[in-house]
Amino acid sequence: MAAGKPPVIQIRRVTKSYGHGDATVHALRGPSAPDGSPLGVSLDIEEGDFVAVMGSSGSGKSTLMNILGCLDVPTAGRYLLDGIDVGHLDEGQLSLVRNRKIGFVFQSFNLVPRTTALAQVELPLAYAGVRAAERRRRALAALSLVGLGERAGHKPNQLSGGQQQRVAVARALVTSPAMLLADEPTGNLDSHSTEEVLGIIDRLNASGRTVVMITHEDEVARHAKRVIRLVDGAIISDVRQAEVDGPPPALAVEVGV
Ligand SMILES: Nc1ncnc2c1ncn2[C@@H]1O[C@H](COP(=O)(O)OP(=O)(O)O)[C@@H](O)[C@H]1O
Ligand SMILES: [Mg+2]
Image 1 (cartoon, rainbow, N blue to C red):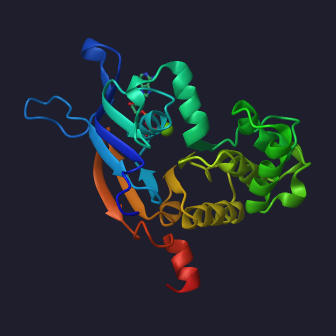
Image 2 (image 1 turned 90 degrees about the vertical axis):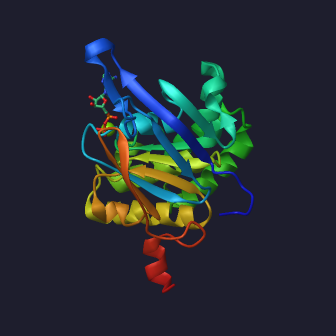
Image 3 (image 1 turned 135 degrees about the horizontal axis):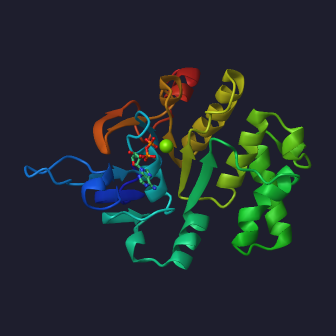
């Protein structure tokens, strides 16, 4: 960890419940107090870490991701993102935080149809008010970073699944977000494209970007430096596989560290 730097994510006793009374579902609850009430989930994520969140269907992964991504707010508890208490922000401020601090990658790519890779990657910069020439320069740089500099003019239907997901990764990182948030990013990819996309995420993390990734697959989680498992809305294990400061495990093998 960089000396003196606060964690990029600080979650304190966060709960999320849906419904009321007997029908209440505690999607995030953490451990239970002696009287059975939920104590909430607490979690710190350091800058530069690469965290995989695992758990079976219904364990609360998407609920946690939505809160981390400021797409939803906790029922109780505090969330500080990059030092900002997001509980105090209104919807307009939250959308600014999403745009500036978080890069999203989804299982289904979520690209805009009939739109070139370059235009897709420029989009978040347009929302952020970056001028056209600078947008183009930065979008091209991001596409080059994911190995698609030559494909800038291609539309989604002219790209393979793996290439489409790389466009989505370029779009996620073009704003230099504090964190890359990925929900099953390789869930729709064949094994070759999976390795390609994970290789890019490995390198992004090696160059200092914080990554939080939901995955079902052990093979994918092996790329992470830290693996958190959820059961019934609580963290039941939290295992460090590699140091925050060092390279992610898959790259460490390659360079023989
Ligand atoms: N909008 C909602 N309304 C009611 N219950 C929900 C809602 N979203 C999620 N849940 C419930 O919360 C629990 C956790 O869901 P979720 O976070 O989607 O799990 P996962 O992503 O691990 O499959 C599940 O029991 C789910 O049915
Ligand atoms: Mg889910």
